[in-house]
Image 1: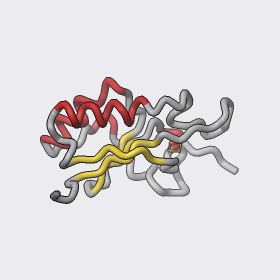
Image 2: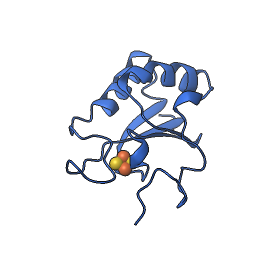
Image 3: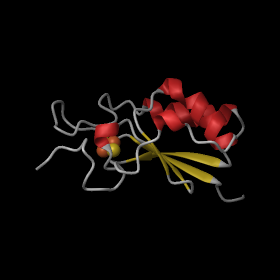
Amino acid sequence: MAPFEKHLFICCNQRPAGHPRGCCDPSASEALQKAFKKALAERGLARRIRANRSGCLDQCEHGPTVVVYPDAVWYGGVTEGDIPEIVDRHLVGGEPVGRLRLADACVNTATCTHKPRS
Ligand code: FES
């Protein structure tokens, strides 16, 4: 079997209600990951693109968070309604969905203004 061309990591982390950083899957349903998996299967892409459950990706304030590798494209505020656009435009068409992309200033930086200050 050929290696996967892309991996999606879909944060399914849960935290208690009221946590200052929130979390990407407060209902613990993993619904977003399951819906990505279903969308890929419906398009015959399941052997080329893998939709993995992930723990916290440290972008909690922007969640639900999804990252696509090897593209290193980070998405925030992703809903099930966004999945067809991400799959069809980005994963198939090669054009990331700009309206959902996280700013470079927010990804893996200590200076992201959305994170709580300690
Ligand atoms: S809880 Fe999803 S990125 Fe931290």
